[in-house]
Length: 293
Image: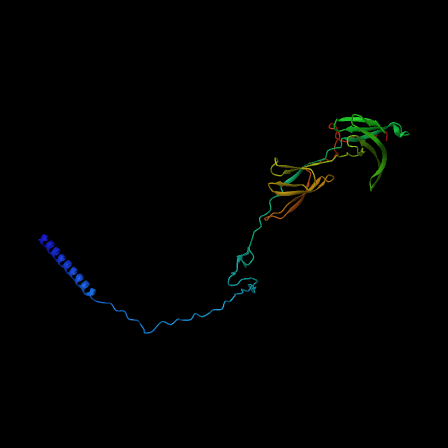
């Protein structure tokens, strides 16, 4: 029964397909015999339409006026609004300043080379005869003591005594006591120059050495020879402004950057000793052998 039903459906499908083909071909033949006819929408020729001329205008944009609140903005310059640290609206951007880094330098050494000849003192052998004074010198290079008379000279140390005198000075304005200061003027045969030596203080030669060290890293040291020198450290660019050997201080400026302002500090020599520098390695003070006073 089912097979007959399938056959019946198949026959009906074929009949429908044939009817469809017949309708398609019959309609195509009828359309081929027709002629399409187009008619204009209106009679007459097209008339040209004139294009109007537009005058060019240059726009002048005015500056944005200041508003009553102090903000300056217009159509094309919208306001920039910030929130300050107190939670209020503001037109000023909030830029929290980063604290500057520590200065980070300390003064660990201040040295000046001693002049090669130092006057350590003198001995009065005869108060009535100044020529019998015995002058005591020290040769820094050879580490030898020398004894010369006034107008004497040393072939080994290459200098001669031109003049020797003793003067009296008050200790201070508040103290009326007197001290005697011996001064020897010598001629240096090496450079042909005259030098004045005092037995109360050392005479320094040319040059100096200033040593600055990082406060955090001991291995970072800067060696300088004169004021005005510029140097670099991991903390920035610096300049040695001034040197004061009497006060045992130096003034250093760290130059400013876009983030930090410049900063100037006075650094004091650490572990400063109060006694005067020695002319001998084995002794801590300058010898004063004015024994007959």
